[in-house]
Length: 173
Image 1 (tube, rainbow, N blue to C red):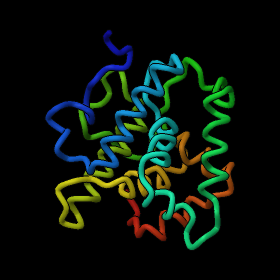
Image 2 (image 1 turned 30 degrees about the vertical axis):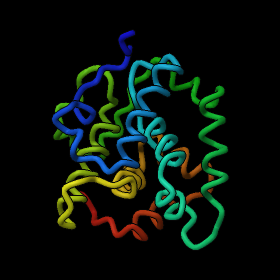
Image 3 (image 1 turned 45 degrees about the horizontal axis):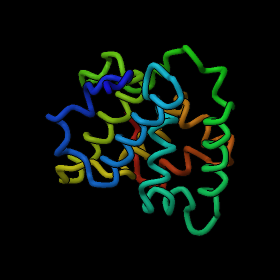
Image 4 (image 1 turned 180 degrees about the vertical axis):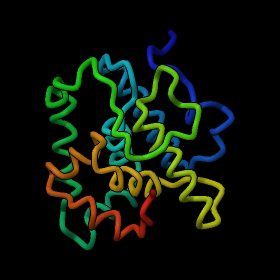
Protein backbone atom coordinates (compact mmCIF):
# COMPACT_ATOMS: atom_id res chain seq x y z
CA UNK A 1 0.00 0.00 0.00
CA UNK A 2 1.39 3.39 -0.96
CA UNK A 3 1.27 6.26 1.49
CA UNK A 4 -0.84 9.30 0.63
CA UNK A 5 1.85 11.42 2.27
CA UNK A 6 4.90 11.44 0.01
CA UNK A 7 8.31 10.21 1.14
CA UNK A 8 10.05 13.36 0.06
CA UNK A 9 12.59 15.85 1.32
CA UNK A 10 13.62 15.29 4.93
CA UNK A 11 12.44 11.68 4.94
CA UNK A 12 14.17 10.57 1.77
CA UNK A 13 16.78 7.84 1.85
CA UNK A 14 19.47 10.46 1.22
CA UNK A 15 18.58 12.17 4.53
CA UNK A 16 18.03 8.99 6.54
CA UNK A 17 21.55 8.97 8.01
CA UNK A 18 21.07 12.47 9.39
CA UNK A 19 18.50 11.44 12.04
CA UNK A 20 19.12 10.12 15.52
CA UNK A 21 17.15 6.94 16.22
CA UNK A 22 14.57 8.93 18.21
CA UNK A 23 14.14 11.56 15.51
CA UNK A 24 13.84 8.88 12.82
CA UNK A 25 11.08 7.23 14.86
CA UNK A 26 9.32 10.59 15.26
CA UNK A 27 9.46 11.39 11.54
CA UNK A 28 8.15 7.94 10.60
CA UNK A 29 5.41 8.22 13.21
CA UNK A 30 4.44 11.70 12.02
CA UNK A 31 4.00 10.41 8.47
CA UNK A 32 1.82 7.55 9.72
CA UNK A 33 -0.22 9.92 11.90
CA UNK A 34 -0.84 12.27 8.96
CA UNK A 35 -1.99 9.39 6.75
CA UNK A 36 -4.21 7.94 9.49
CA UNK A 37 -5.77 11.35 10.13
CA UNK A 38 -6.42 11.87 6.41
CA UNK A 39 -4.16 14.94 6.28
CA UNK A 40 -2.50 15.86 3.00
CA UNK A 41 0.71 16.96 4.69
CA UNK A 42 2.84 16.19 7.70
CA UNK A 43 2.73 19.38 9.76
CA UNK A 44 4.67 20.54 12.80
CA UNK A 45 1.98 19.33 15.20
CA UNK A 46 2.31 15.79 13.76
CA UNK A 47 6.07 16.04 14.31
CA UNK A 48 5.69 17.37 17.85
CA UNK A 49 3.19 14.67 18.80
CA UNK A 50 5.36 11.76 17.69
CA UNK A 51 8.49 13.46 19.02
CA UNK A 52 6.90 13.66 22.47
CA UNK A 53 5.95 9.97 22.24
CA UNK A 54 9.32 8.71 20.98
CA UNK A 55 12.01 10.83 22.66
CA UNK A 56 12.33 11.04 26.46
CA UNK A 57 14.88 13.88 26.11
CA UNK A 58 12.22 16.01 24.42
CA UNK A 59 9.78 15.38 27.27
CA UNK A 60 12.48 16.32 29.80
CA UNK A 61 13.23 19.51 27.86
CA UNK A 62 9.54 20.48 27.79
CA UNK A 63 9.24 19.78 31.52
CA UNK A 64 12.22 22.06 32.19
CA UNK A 65 13.02 20.94 35.69
CA UNK A 66 9.94 19.02 36.74
CA UNK A 67 7.06 21.26 35.68
CA UNK A 68 5.00 18.35 34.33
CA UNK A 69 4.14 20.31 31.19
CA UNK A 70 4.90 17.34 28.94
CA UNK A 71 1.84 15.48 30.23
CA UNK A 72 -0.39 18.48 29.60
CA UNK A 73 1.14 18.98 26.16
CA UNK A 74 0.52 15.35 25.22
CA UNK A 75 -3.09 15.83 26.32
CA UNK A 76 -3.51 18.78 23.96
CA UNK A 77 -1.89 16.83 21.13
CA UNK A 78 -4.33 13.96 21.68
CA UNK A 79 -7.21 16.44 21.63
CA UNK A 80 -5.92 17.70 18.29
CA UNK A 81 -5.91 14.14 16.96
CA UNK A 82 -9.52 13.55 17.98
CA UNK A 83 -10.93 16.79 16.66
CA UNK A 84 -9.09 19.83 17.98
CA UNK A 85 -7.30 20.20 14.65
CA UNK A 86 -10.36 20.01 12.41
CA UNK A 87 -10.18 23.73 11.74
CA UNK A 88 -6.83 23.03 10.08
CA UNK A 89 -8.26 20.35 7.81
CA UNK A 90 -7.45 21.01 4.17
CA UNK A 91 -5.07 23.88 4.95
CA UNK A 92 -1.35 24.16 4.33
CA UNK A 93 0.79 25.11 7.30
CA UNK A 94 3.26 27.83 6.37
CA UNK A 95 4.35 30.05 9.20
CA UNK A 96 6.89 31.87 7.04
CA UNK A 97 9.18 32.31 10.04
CA UNK A 98 12.01 30.08 8.85
CA UNK A 99 13.42 29.74 5.34
CA UNK A 100 12.88 26.40 3.62
CA UNK A 101 16.22 25.14 2.35
CA UNK A 102 15.46 21.44 1.89
CA UNK A 103 13.56 20.19 -1.11
CA UNK A 104 10.57 19.49 1.15
CA UNK A 105 7.92 21.60 -0.51
CA UNK A 106 6.81 18.59 -2.52
CA UNK A 107 3.52 17.08 -1.42
CA UNK A 108 3.88 15.43 1.93
CA UNK A 109 5.49 18.10 4.13
CA UNK A 110 4.11 21.46 5.18
CA UNK A 111 6.53 24.31 4.51
CA UNK A 112 6.81 24.96 8.27
CA UNK A 113 7.63 21.29 8.98
CA UNK A 114 10.25 21.29 6.23
CA UNK A 115 11.78 24.49 7.62
CA UNK A 116 11.88 23.04 11.14
CA UNK A 117 13.64 19.92 9.86
CA UNK A 118 16.21 21.99 7.98
CA UNK A 119 16.76 24.10 11.09
CA UNK A 120 17.29 20.93 13.14
CA UNK A 121 19.98 19.76 10.71
CA UNK A 122 21.65 23.18 10.76
CA UNK A 123 21.57 23.24 14.56
CA UNK A 124 23.14 19.76 14.75
CA UNK A 125 25.92 20.74 12.35
CA UNK A 126 26.60 23.93 14.32
CA UNK A 127 27.32 21.89 17.45
CA UNK A 128 29.52 19.52 15.42
CA UNK A 129 27.10 16.60 15.15
CA UNK A 130 26.23 14.80 11.93
CA UNK A 131 22.80 13.71 13.16
CA UNK A 132 19.90 15.88 14.21
CA UNK A 133 18.39 14.96 17.58
CA UNK A 134 14.82 15.31 18.77
CA UNK A 135 15.78 18.32 20.88
CA UNK A 136 17.13 20.01 17.74
CA UNK A 137 13.71 19.70 16.14
CA UNK A 138 11.96 20.75 19.36
CA UNK A 139 14.13 23.86 19.50
CA UNK A 140 13.16 24.82 15.96
CA UNK A 141 9.46 24.21 16.64
CA UNK A 142 9.66 26.43 19.73
CA UNK A 143 11.49 29.12 17.79
CA UNK A 144 8.88 29.30 15.02
CA UNK A 145 6.16 30.97 17.07
CA UNK A 146 3.62 30.85 14.23
CA UNK A 147 3.74 27.12 13.48
CA UNK A 148 1.00 24.75 14.66
CA UNK A 149 3.32 22.95 17.08
CA UNK A 150 4.15 26.23 18.83
CA UNK A 151 0.46 27.10 19.01
CA UNK A 152 -0.30 23.76 20.65
CA UNK A 153 2.63 24.20 23.05
CA UNK A 154 1.38 27.62 24.10
CA UNK A 155 -2.17 26.31 24.62
CA UNK A 156 -0.68 23.64 26.90
CA UNK A 157 1.06 26.33 28.94
CA UNK A 158 4.55 25.90 27.49
CA UNK A 159 6.34 29.21 27.09
CA UNK A 160 7.98 28.64 23.71
CA UNK A 161 10.38 31.58 24.13
CA UNK A 162 11.63 30.21 27.45
CA UNK A 163 11.87 26.71 25.94
CA UNK A 164 13.89 28.02 22.97
CA UNK A 165 16.20 29.91 25.34
CA UNK A 166 16.60 26.84 27.57
CA UNK A 167 17.60 24.84 24.48
CA UNK A 168 20.01 27.67 23.58
CA UNK A 169 18.51 28.52 20.21
CA UNK A 170 20.14 31.52 18.55
CA UNK A 171 17.83 33.92 16.76
CA UNK A 172 17.32 33.06 13.09
CA UNK A 173 17.20 36.08 10.81
